[in-house]
Structures are given as C-alpha cells and as structure tokens.
Image 1 (tube, one colour):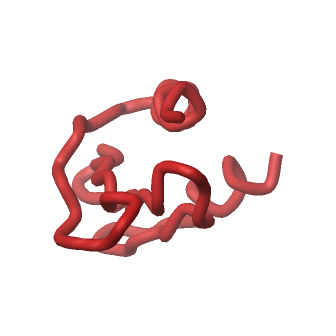
Image 2 (image 1 turned 135 degrees about the horizontal axis):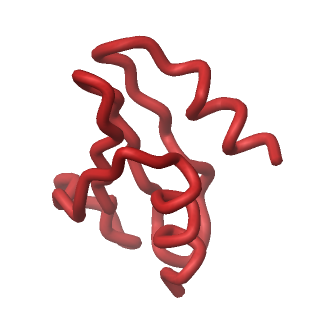
Length: 67
C-alpha cells in the first residue's frame, strides 16, 4: 500500500497531498503525533478541515469512503 508508506514517512509538520480523484485531493498533515485530514473541494478552493486521526489506517479508510 503505497499511500500508507508515504504517510508513514511524514515528519512533524510535513504534508502529504493525496492523489487526485473524483473528490478532488486531500491533504494529510502530521503534527504532534496526529494526522490531520483536509478535503480539497473537487473544483478547487481552500482545504476544509475534516478530522484528525492517531492511526493511519483509520485515515485511509475514511478517505476511501469519499466518492
């Protein structure tokens, strides 16, 4: 799972941009041991805070439910 590995490599304060899909892109920020998920609207615009996660697998499962 390439996305899992990319997110796992993040250091404090770094961001991972999720590859584009039907929902647009997602940003994942790693800060203080937590992963913050932001949804980028499909047609552009400012990222929207979605949730924070302690586990990468929970974050990935959430993004995979977006259509």
